[in-house]
Figure 1 (cartoon, helix red, strand yellow):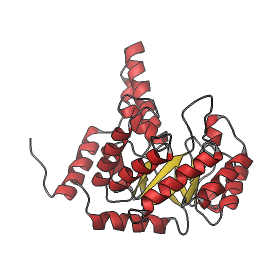
Figure 2 (figure 1 turned 90 degrees about the vertical axis):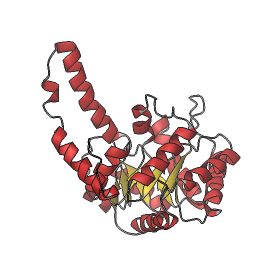
Figure 3 (figure 1 turned 45 degrees about the horizontal axis):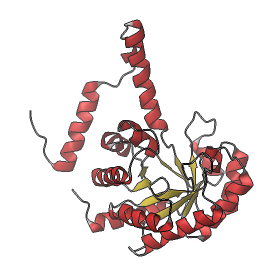
Figure 4 (figure 1 turned 120 degrees about the horizontal axis):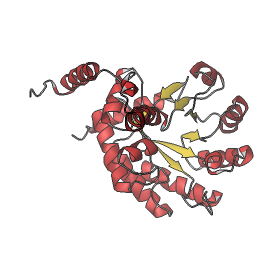
Length: 288
């Protein structure tokens, strides 16, 4: 069921307000069930994860097609009552015209925000040149503006993830993306308080998204004190789920033991949650 234009507009308005003050956590579900569960915990917005979704479909990260991504975004928007930010990889295009066309299609799914990376996917040249990356962000901005301009655009500098952990290059790129029309800036791979503070200061007053996908010593309160506006976890929740599955499956396959199920979620608890959740959404439950 396609969400109404008014509900999409409301979600986008709320999403922009979240970026204006304070710090919020925007966790990353990989399917409808994980999205509904996270929503029930009170998170005010959710973000898709390209890696988590790809793994659920039997693909590596960056291995899904544009159409797979668009179908997933539409499904996630329709299934949730909170704003959805799209991990839209590098726009699934190498040229600005393709980025613009694909961003327009992503906006039509009803997402409240979307990110565009500056990574090429090619080992020999892992990042687009700065001029190319800026042109791509401008194309994304123009595509959004032609459709009302209320979808939030996130500019991502992938330097730290592709083996170029240069803070000067990262901040230079992020400032350029801000000038090209990005509403929020994101440099995945930052780990230290010093790195985080430097990025926040470099792009101020634009909001910064921080990826925390590991067992970090910093808490949400610590990160908020550094000036970060939002915190995402990328594929970390999906990896945590896969970790439990892999440990249990390997114990069964290699040792013939079943104690890998010891910390599994209770089926009755999951059934109760999703039955109540479905009833709240549809007003009825199909009886077997």
